[in-house]
Length: 163
Image 1 (cartoon, rainbow, N blue to C red):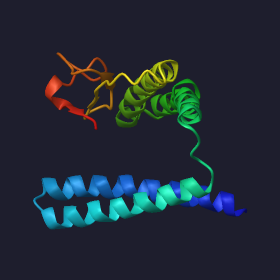
Image 2: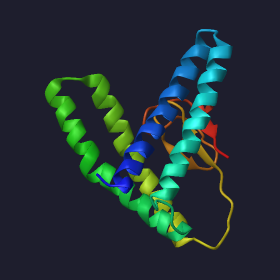
Image 3: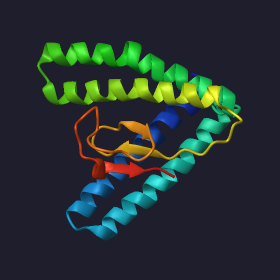
């Protein structure tokens, strides 16, 4: 194995640790353990630093135009190849919890690819747009939501504006 392979494995591990610790922090907050939630968030932030360092050193960051093209490719792979396989497997297993998760993610990944394509087409125009994300399924949209999420049916207050 090369150091580039090791960087990729380390990036993957650190990225997963970040998301895991943020999920743990959310649960700790729900259970009233706010200090423990703060610790999980601090560790998650540190894991992000590690992941960014590894990603940068493996050459994973290009120009914004290159990054948009890479993002389009990744999202397209997910909704055309990856998630359909996962959906089929979860149907075969009768795992409806996994099926729901894969189906909503699959729908949202297509939307992400479309948003990245739009950004690539409009690069340099510098028009500011606000993005909102459904906290239930991840549906991402431009402009403030009205009504229910078209993917999971969550009400508009479940959307969070991103920075």
